[in-house]
Image (cartoon, rainbow, N blue to C red; front, top):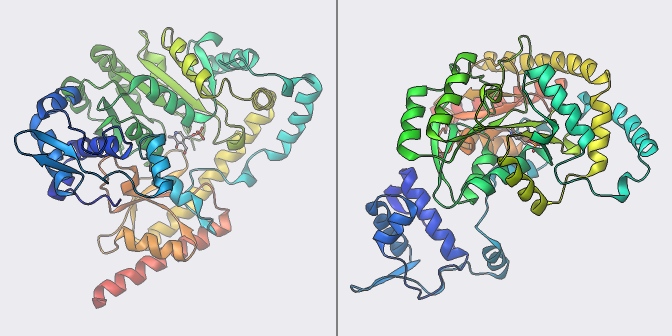
Length: 479
Ligand SMILES: Cc1ncc(COP(=O)(O)O)c(C=O)c1O
């Protein structure tokens, strides 16, 4: 069944979330044909929203044919309002309707790849890694014959706790680290523990779109916090914490995806204090820290935390090997106990072979040599992209590290048209609205400079800006 528009109310984010929440219950078959729905008062109390919001959502669902009203008796589910065909029926039974616009974009192979925040495999240490595969099988001949412990290989956790101490000044024991299969799994596990339907979660605006999809699937209520080159407006964050009592604030404060901004040092301690005061867990996702151009970024938020209100996620997917899926999550007891339990249900531990290969590469001197070269290569890539953007007269804030540029399009170039035409010509990018918890930001796009080789980068950017010029010219001619 097609989901029809819910009218003008769609622009109200809270209404939209309540509407989606109900729609999901119907689509999953939790609310079945001819079931009577809870009263408006009851549902408003359950969701922690105003009754008028629930009333408007009931009304919109009635207009869309999903519900019907019986005089004085209340709202009922219309027959046939569940997803119709058998494939969709299966999806509805399995869970909430899951959409991932980012994975839809990534699925189509393209020549000029600017939508993947990944590093050109040619710049990663693939050849060296094969040496370590051999070494690992020599050292641990039974490595494939056993599970890892759920929390992760102890040798690796001990090494990483030392590394976090020496490099980022984090005081951690090996017992305070969990190895996950990528940062995405870590976000998923934390969301599973922390978020239930309509729980408030603070998210940066814009942010990493997959995290938004994970929180939406948990049924959470997204509360946006603007991020700028100067960081956050802490007074506004405090007001949001006071008003919404969020369970957590998901942040990516260092060479942020998609903007590249870095939250300044002076805000870090203050935000941790706010999190402690309002009992709001800070989930610090930090995969780009080591990909800086000149200066080292400020210390992680985790370093300021004394009471266990920060969880630190450090993925090595970006600059070591996305294929190994190695990420470390740092948190204090008792949250670690809950994370381990969630991880054991998810996959019973990240593959030991991957952890051991990573460990041996990570402790070798090759890592620092690789990082030194990689930083230079990324800076060259960034500058090529910036030269082409400057030639086109577009606007962006130059980042101090990371993999992306967050670019403002001229008003004369609609991003939807640009996206369709670019995909037709085998050029991909991420439209800004995907990264926006409110689904707006239509004149922005995220361009990743790290994946395409230098030649393809220059050529692809020239093509992309030429397509934009054509669209502008058509607009002037009124086509
Ligand atoms: C902010 C952020 N967090 C997490 C991830 C996913 O990391 P992983 O590959 O370790 O799952 C990405 C990937 O782009 C990201 O940008």
